[in-house]
Length: 512
Image (cartoon, rainbow, N blue to C red; front, side, top):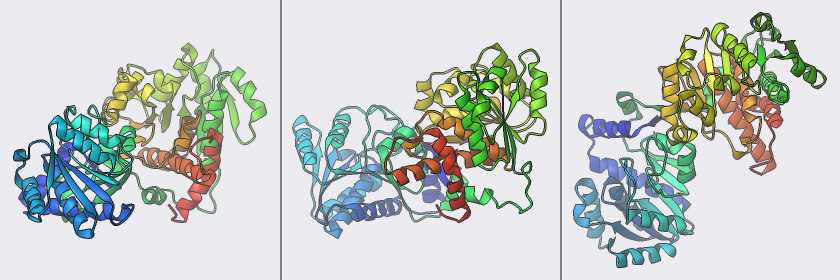
């Protein structure tokens, strides 16, 4: 998996490269800028495009001066603007400023209102804008005049490139610090950053390219990394071919405890997800009135009736011989539902995928999950995660990585925070980041199918592998449907489940 660094780890990486490996900072900056210039050159609308590089006073600005020099050498029409007082430049950034000026080039300064007006007019007619204002070190709200410049950049029709990460974006959370550049491409240096791989970060960074710095990636072994991007190759390696003699019980026996009256669709989708992911058996356990409604709708799926007067005993009967349990989709949070949920989640000692209402049943008492028997895989959306942790949905979305780590700490469980770029938190491991997916997956029942996928995989894989494989296969299904239909909407949840075998076939064939 591709490793992803936090702001603090990026700083440590630079220190190790410079202090321990004796690679001068000026060399790192040159390599970064040259790599970025190569990417930009490949994407220029024409060889003589009008390029404006907007530089700040820090090292990100220094990267911008290097980019300008190389693009100028390629033949682009490059203008460099500097935001602030040039006397604040120092170190490697100053050296690259001087190298640009030494070639007989000008650096236009924008700080006064008149100068900012001139920059705004120039940006309006540029073909390409390179954002080199702020780098990964920014940890405060963007103020004037920088916020005005960023707003101007975003309002242009130019092709926009950001160096390392879009200026104004928090490197750890992906949240805009007041305002942030919306780039079409981001060329990040050395390694991916956490903030690029959140839903908000992804909206600002566009396509991501990694420019190497000329030092071994193994340096990350010394600095650590907080995240890893899930790769299709890793998931494919876990999903090994089955023996010809495989029996349906050996293929995976999943119990789905879900689907209260009026919400039986959730249980059906979870069970379909389990079967399409390879489970040999899937059984829905629910209340008699729900089971009665299910009977005419199921062929391959079996049912088990839960008795409200003997909840624990009827559950134990249903749990016999199961390889994994999916609990919660559409199950409700009334007294009988909570009693059933607590019995399954806390007392059954097999792998459990805890979703939807089963998470809400533990709202504000995440620590109770730490005493559960068996392995837990929690699959909350941001609202459910907020209820579990006793914080708001907005707080979860503001720092998704911290929310996942806190949920893992409190529960000891594997935690899947759903959404664009779903996160999988595993105790003692970096957060796994799923970049597969498409807007097509934003449809009712999508999470129910995911719950079933993970449960099926949990019958044969380690729980962490099951969670990671589940979110990745789910995302690939969304991508495949969007490619086939050439549209980013209109998919329904049942089609996600139907698409799983094709995705699994491509994984088995080594196709991405």
